[in-house]
Amino acid sequence: MNLFEPLINVFRFLFDGFYAITAMAGFANYGLAIIMMTILVKVLMYPLTAKQVRSMKAMQELQPALKKLQKDYKNNPQLLQQKMGELYKESGVNPLSGCLPLLIQMPILMGVYYCLYGYSYTGDPTFLWLTSLSDTDHLYILPILSALTTYIQQKQTMVNNGSDNQQMKIMSYMMPLFIGWISLSFPSGLVVYWVTMNLCQIVQQWYMFRGEKKLEAEVEDTDESVKK
Image (cartoon, rainbow, N blue to C red; front, side):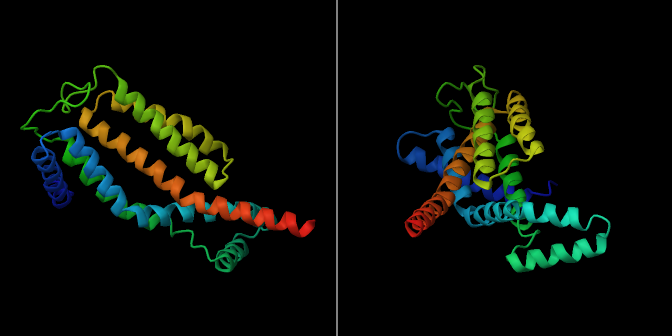
């Protein structure tokens, strides 16, 4: 028995339900059902996504101070841990707070993955240029989109977090290439889910950080006014 079986059954119920909705609307389509189910999942997970992204941003902002502590107390690991703990407490940042949302999201994402990976389409499995959602994309459009949206999503995260970590920069190129490569052998339905999920993540991150950028701009304008 698959460990994610209960979640798989929930998502298959949702998937079948969304397909039934498209059928009642007169345009039965599994591709649209995948997109609608993915959007619903991302909307429901938004609070967890927001908590994870903000935690990553907060940790990134602390990096200069953490590097200074590591330099100052490199010969005293015990005192270094104490100082780091004090810094986290003063800043109101929990270094583990970004892990919990991710751990909660993983079973959900795996449930959707297994739901679509082994799904048996009983109706018309075609979608747009795809001859079957259970087969690979013969035009390679979806693998390209999966790589491109993964790159944009990661680049957006790095820019918003102000990250200049060299390893992160390398991963921002390697991960999209890897995702695009494995998408070549994945069923098209699964890649439609991945692309939709990336697009939702890009929109959610834009929404989360647009308010902060507006606030930063207002603060800068206020500072300029004070200087004048």
